[in-house]
Length: 261
Image (tube, rainbow, N blue to C red):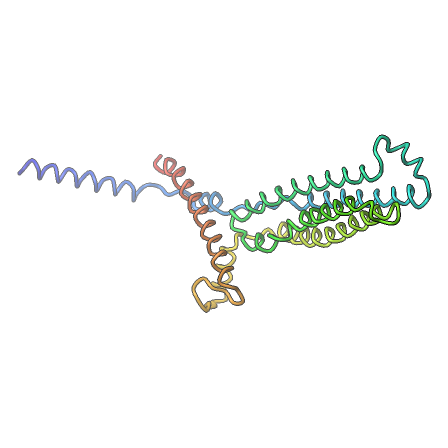
């Protein structure tokens, strides 16, 4: 009995000593914790790439129209054949269009990757605002490829010899107009986002709600939002919070040995 009491008393003394050591341990500077755990803004590097690809498409359409003008309208078809041999004008245009389409495929994957990274960092509004815009140029060129294939397959049905070339040029110009509109809208949104350097959406919402002291009509709901959008946005927000909590846990574990020293 006496031995057990001694063990208990020694155990209590050891435990109290450990607690006292933890309470009296020096704390880490607050500025160090703040700097290391504060979300760092990382711009979305798709602005320049999309504008460069748009310029390539503009140059392709312009060169195609110039080639059609000199080789068809001016009657210099024989001279053009000498420079384009062993290919003809139609083959060169189709090959160039396929290469341009492949560049758009790579660019769409590039955009998707960086927007998923921005989404994981908490920028959900940006992801939702451009989720369709970033893929519209690829869809436009894919539709144009189908139209060009249909025109070439019906080449023998046209009365004029070069009518199918004019139709292909019309498809290219229509693709360019649609691509310019949507790429510029997308580029403006990305430029404004990178320039404003916002904090993650959940931090901005907490700051706005605390300053306005505005009560929402329901937990997790927003006005003028469908139930499906609300559920999907909440899922994205939960994923970001899980990622952020995991990062903070890793940071706390890495700082624990420093504090014990």
